[in-house]
Length: 214
Image (cartoon, rainbow, N blue to C red; front, side):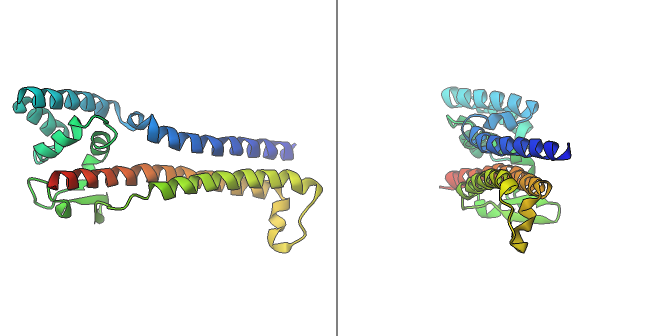
């Protein structure tokens, strides 16, 4: 009975790995805003509307007030305007709302110099904004993990009739061991997906501050 449960879990693992590939592409192309909290979604709409109104009517006071409430009074108004007037919210506005609490301006009240901006990853660890986009490499890693899951699942079925005698690979003859490795790959892909979203947000913020500086 246990062996049937293990094979069922392997099948579920293959399905989950395929879904992870779909999910990371969906989040990039469609569902980026779905990772915002309800409060930040509301701020996104209000700030985008106010930025549009401010540019059309030169009514900066209302935008300044909304931006100060959402991003903090020390945040540079011009940078906020660039972020929320961008046609595609996923470029700057969404990353800014998601990561605003991690930004530190090192005493620069204008917050326009990229070199003065630090990202607080942990209470004891700060870095500058990244200038290299590693998204392609991380997506590739998720795809490779998915391929490995499918390969391991296929080998599990193959090993029923043709077990491996090589000591180094003998664990492949045990479906339970293969199942555990499969779920290790799935967990790795989950972490990579979260890391991708985090690092890409920071990369986009680096572009935002660089764009303002230019």
